[in-house]
Image (tube, rainbow, N blue to C red; front, side, top):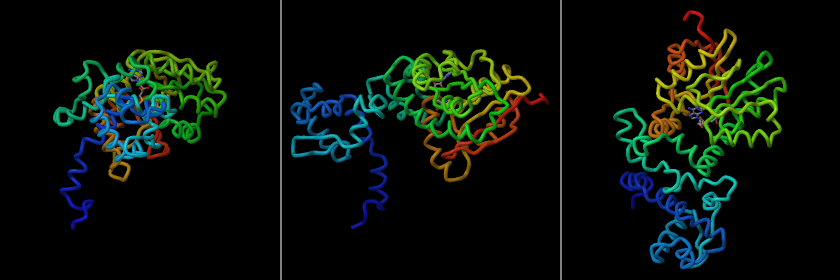
Amino acid sequence: MADPRTNPRSRLRELGNLLPGYAIRAAATLRIPDAIADGVTETADIARRIHGTEAPTRALLHYLAGLGVLAATDTDQFELTDIGRLLCSDDAESLRAVYDLEQGRARAEVFWRLPDSIRTGQAAYPEIHGRTFWEDLAADRELGSTWAAMFAQHAEPLGHDLATVYDWSERHQVADLGGGKGVIMAALLEAHPHLRGTILDLEGMSVMAREFLGERNLVGRTDVTTGSFFDPLPDADVYLLSWILHDWPDDKSVDILANCASAARNNTRILVVEQLFEADAVTRGLASMYLLMLMLYGGRERSREEFDQLGEVAGLVRVGEYALSNGFVALEYALDDRS
Ligand SMILES: C[S@@+](CC[C@H](N)C(=O)[O-])C[C@H]1O[C@@H](n2cnc3c(N)ncnc32)[C@H](O)[C@@H]1O
């Protein structure tokens, strides 16, 4: 018999199966892992707790056990696996809010609109929900803090790299635009005691940044400003845009860069931290990020040349490049004195 892993028909059916993703979303939405964490482990009790019907609840629980999200201890008793625990609301690394189909308008629906996004190059999210992904995050504290935690995890190594590879000795004031909860800022300020910082981000994130910087005893050296990088920027000699431009289409990315250029003086630097969409191994992993950015925000991943072109339109020229962890680079731009 043909090996199902190499049989193209079986492989396609496996790749095209939506049920695993939606079963996980159903579990998160119905808070099944929370119920089990609270000691409600038998099918009938779980069904009562989630206001479910018993027989379909049993089927879902067994399906989740087959996925490795739960473990079946005997025919009608279930416990959490390490994967299932990540779907509990109070887990330190909880992803529950990301998969909750009823909360903060989870992003699942955007996938149905991928063909449209491919045709138009536009985001699906605001079309579906009537407001942007960032507005939704700002309006939903649990969702906002789940995403902030994911951004923080990604930012942790970048902060340490940036503190090390870039020469901060002649720099004084760094503004992290869309700086999230402040992980990169904390790494820079802790490594370079002469630096002061400003974090500019939207309402929900700036509340989290104030809390986080307070825990790191950095409040005195950092201004946290609630606002938008499309509005006039605070004064700084370095503007940091880490994982920002890939959230935006070209015209908006130029607006952000041009805004930095308007605030810049001759010695100001703009650091763009991104992965480069180029023909190597990293690129293959980046294709999924590209599609996600497209569906959520109309954003995209870009090559070095594409960033340089955006910079050029905004009146900036690349003056440096620094390799960071996980395939990220910091592209350093300055005012183009020819423009
Ligand atoms: C992908 S996260 C990157 C966070 C952080 N810079 C990092 O490297 O992990 C994008 C950030 O941009 C912020 N953001 C989105 N729109 C914004 C706007 N108009 N003005 C300021 N920040 C914005 C979001 O709240 C979020 O914190």
